[in-house]
Image 1: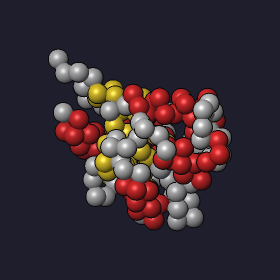
Image 2: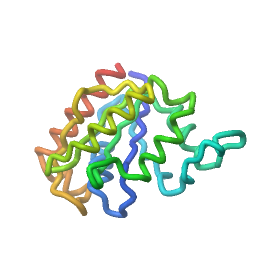
Image 3: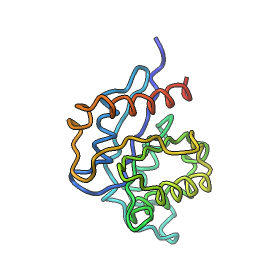
Image 4: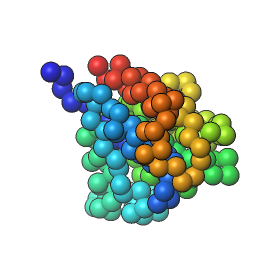
Length: 178
């Protein structure tokens, strides 16, 4: 039996009903062994990044984020686009990881859950992650073309096409992690 490979799912949206979260939750349901997907739930609790606060003791939510990233073998990211950019709350999360020892070299797979083909934030996100020394696994985010805001996990799982897209993304992660 293969050793479980922990994948931390990072959703870039704070919405209660988020298509990006739905895609990640559906991926959790579809994940093949040995992948073990877990959702990060602390995005809203992170304080605004201030380099002056990046010292001992770190804020508790930041310690929890860094610990979760450190325990993960890879990251699966689904992030929306707002005003052609990465949402502020998710950029804040990334800023807290810049100075961490847990993040550099971490394999990261990006999902693009936009049916409208948003690409500005995806390109910016990939550039930010490469600058942070992540191992971005594909040149383009893996597409999971969801219908838009308010999509649920059940709706994703009811679509054979969306499930096939998620399985392709998970196969990429599985191949990378061995």
